Image (tube, rainbow, N blue to C red; front, side, top):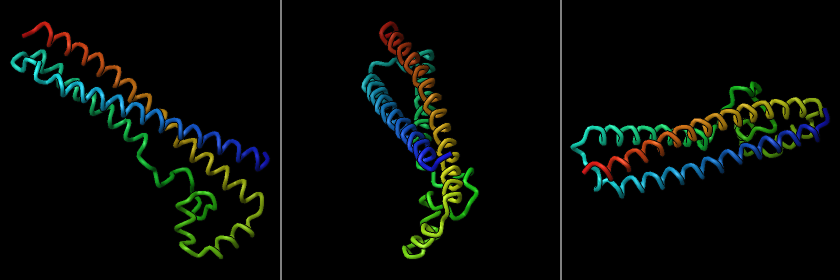
Length: 165
Protein backbone atom coordinates (compact mmCIF):
# COMPACT_ATOMS: atom_id res chain seq x y z
CA UNK A 1 0.00 0.00 0.00
CA UNK A 2 1.31 3.43 -0.91
CA UNK A 3 1.95 6.15 1.66
CA UNK A 4 -0.70 8.31 -0.02
CA UNK A 5 -3.26 5.54 0.44
CA UNK A 6 -2.43 5.33 4.13
CA UNK A 7 -2.67 9.11 4.46
CA UNK A 8 -6.06 9.01 2.71
CA UNK A 9 -7.35 6.36 5.13
CA UNK A 10 -5.93 8.31 8.07
CA UNK A 11 -7.74 11.47 6.91
CA UNK A 12 -11.04 9.63 6.44
CA UNK A 13 -10.92 8.19 9.95
CA UNK A 14 -9.98 11.57 11.40
CA UNK A 15 -12.98 13.07 9.61
CA UNK A 16 -15.25 10.34 11.02
CA UNK A 17 -14.00 11.14 14.52
CA UNK A 18 -14.81 14.82 13.93
CA UNK A 19 -18.33 13.81 12.84
CA UNK A 20 -18.91 11.87 16.07
CA UNK A 21 -17.85 14.90 18.08
CA UNK A 22 -20.30 17.06 16.10
CA UNK A 23 -23.10 14.55 16.76
CA UNK A 24 -22.19 14.48 20.44
CA UNK A 25 -22.36 18.29 20.59
CA UNK A 26 -25.81 18.22 19.00
CA UNK A 27 -26.96 15.57 21.50
CA UNK A 28 -25.57 17.67 24.35
CA UNK A 29 -27.61 20.66 23.16
CA UNK A 30 -30.68 18.41 22.96
CA UNK A 31 -29.98 17.19 26.49
CA UNK A 32 -29.70 20.74 27.79
CA UNK A 33 -33.02 21.60 26.15
CA UNK A 34 -34.69 18.59 27.81
CA UNK A 35 -33.18 19.51 31.19
CA UNK A 36 -34.29 23.12 30.76
CA UNK A 37 -37.81 22.06 29.85
CA UNK A 38 -37.94 19.66 32.78
CA UNK A 39 -36.89 22.33 35.25
CA UNK A 40 -39.46 24.81 33.92
CA UNK A 41 -42.17 22.18 34.46
CA UNK A 42 -41.19 21.19 38.03
CA UNK A 43 -43.75 23.54 39.58
CA UNK A 44 -46.57 21.77 37.71
CA UNK A 45 -45.70 18.31 39.05
CA UNK A 46 -47.65 16.69 41.84
CA UNK A 47 -44.94 15.32 44.15
CA UNK A 48 -47.49 13.50 46.31
CA UNK A 49 -48.21 11.05 43.47
CA UNK A 50 -45.72 8.16 43.53
CA UNK A 51 -46.21 7.39 39.81
CA UNK A 52 -45.20 10.93 38.92
CA UNK A 53 -42.21 10.84 41.27
CA UNK A 54 -41.14 7.49 39.80
CA UNK A 55 -41.45 8.85 36.27
CA UNK A 56 -39.41 11.93 37.22
CA UNK A 57 -36.68 9.80 38.80
CA UNK A 58 -36.54 7.52 35.75
CA UNK A 59 -36.28 10.57 33.47
CA UNK A 60 -33.45 12.04 35.56
CA UNK A 61 -31.57 8.72 35.61
CA UNK A 62 -31.88 8.44 31.82
CA UNK A 63 -30.62 12.02 31.44
CA UNK A 64 -27.58 11.26 33.59
CA UNK A 65 -26.78 8.05 31.71
CA UNK A 66 -27.06 9.71 28.30
CA UNK A 67 -24.90 12.62 29.48
CA UNK A 68 -22.23 10.14 30.57
CA UNK A 69 -22.14 8.57 27.10
CA UNK A 70 -22.07 11.98 25.43
CA UNK A 71 -19.19 13.12 27.61
CA UNK A 72 -17.34 9.84 26.99
CA UNK A 73 -17.60 10.65 23.29
CA UNK A 74 -16.09 14.12 23.46
CA UNK A 75 -13.65 13.57 26.32
CA UNK A 76 -10.08 13.69 24.96
CA UNK A 77 -8.22 10.41 24.95
CA UNK A 78 -4.54 10.94 25.49
CA UNK A 79 -3.42 7.34 25.57
CA UNK A 80 -3.66 4.57 23.07
CA UNK A 81 -3.83 0.88 23.88
CA UNK A 82 -3.23 0.06 20.24
CA UNK A 83 -0.07 2.08 19.68
CA UNK A 84 2.63 -0.02 21.27
CA UNK A 85 5.54 2.02 20.02
CA UNK A 86 7.05 4.60 22.33
CA UNK A 87 8.47 6.87 19.63
CA UNK A 88 5.83 7.46 17.01
CA UNK A 89 6.51 10.32 14.61
CA UNK A 90 2.78 10.81 14.08
CA UNK A 91 1.14 10.57 17.51
CA UNK A 92 1.39 14.01 19.17
CA UNK A 93 1.91 12.69 22.68
CA UNK A 94 4.83 10.52 21.62
CA UNK A 95 6.37 13.48 19.82
CA UNK A 96 6.18 15.79 22.83
CA UNK A 97 7.32 13.08 25.27
CA UNK A 98 10.24 11.99 23.09
CA UNK A 99 11.49 15.33 21.85
CA UNK A 100 10.13 17.99 24.22
CA UNK A 101 11.38 21.20 22.62
CA UNK A 102 14.35 19.70 20.80
CA UNK A 103 13.18 20.36 17.25
CA UNK A 104 16.61 19.52 15.76
CA UNK A 105 16.37 15.99 17.10
CA UNK A 106 12.82 15.64 15.77
CA UNK A 107 13.87 16.91 12.34
CA UNK A 108 16.74 14.42 12.34
CA UNK A 109 14.32 11.56 13.18
CA UNK A 110 12.02 12.63 10.34
CA UNK A 111 14.95 12.77 7.95
CA UNK A 112 16.30 9.38 9.06
CA UNK A 113 12.90 7.68 8.92
CA UNK A 114 12.61 5.48 5.86
CA UNK A 115 9.39 4.92 3.97
CA UNK A 116 8.75 1.50 5.50
CA UNK A 117 9.09 2.82 9.07
CA UNK A 118 6.82 5.76 8.32
CA UNK A 119 4.20 3.52 6.71
CA UNK A 120 4.29 1.20 9.73
CA UNK A 121 3.90 4.19 12.06
CA UNK A 122 1.04 5.54 9.96
CA UNK A 123 -0.63 2.10 9.91
CA UNK A 124 -0.37 1.93 13.72
CA UNK A 125 -1.94 5.37 13.94
CA UNK A 126 -4.76 4.26 11.62
CA UNK A 127 -5.46 1.28 13.88
CA UNK A 128 -5.46 3.52 16.95
CA UNK A 129 -7.77 6.07 15.33
CA UNK A 130 -10.08 3.30 14.08
CA UNK A 131 -10.39 1.99 17.62
CA UNK A 132 -11.09 5.51 18.87
CA UNK A 133 -13.74 6.10 16.18
CA UNK A 134 -15.42 2.79 16.98
CA UNK A 135 -15.63 3.65 20.69
CA UNK A 136 -17.00 7.11 19.92
CA UNK A 137 -19.70 5.70 17.62
CA UNK A 138 -20.67 3.11 20.25
CA UNK A 139 -21.04 5.88 22.84
CA UNK A 140 -23.14 8.00 20.46
CA UNK A 141 -25.37 5.01 19.74
CA UNK A 142 -25.91 4.35 23.46
CA UNK A 143 -26.55 8.03 24.14
CA UNK A 144 -29.22 8.14 21.41
CA UNK A 145 -30.96 5.09 22.86
CA UNK A 146 -31.07 6.66 26.33
CA UNK A 147 -32.24 10.00 24.93
CA UNK A 148 -35.12 8.28 23.14
CA UNK A 149 -36.03 6.48 26.37
CA UNK A 150 -35.86 9.71 28.36
CA UNK A 151 -38.05 11.54 25.86
CA UNK A 152 -40.62 8.75 26.17
CA UNK A 153 -40.35 9.03 29.95
CA UNK A 154 -40.69 12.81 29.73
CA UNK A 155 -43.82 12.50 27.58
CA UNK A 156 -45.31 10.13 30.16
CA UNK A 157 -44.42 12.66 32.86
CA UNK A 158 -46.11 15.47 30.89
CA UNK A 159 -49.23 13.37 30.38
CA UNK A 160 -49.31 12.47 34.07
CA UNK A 161 -48.86 16.10 35.13
CA UNK A 162 -51.77 17.20 32.95
CA UNK A 163 -54.11 14.43 34.14
CA UNK A 164 -53.17 14.16 37.83
CA UNK A 165 -53.63 17.30 39.87
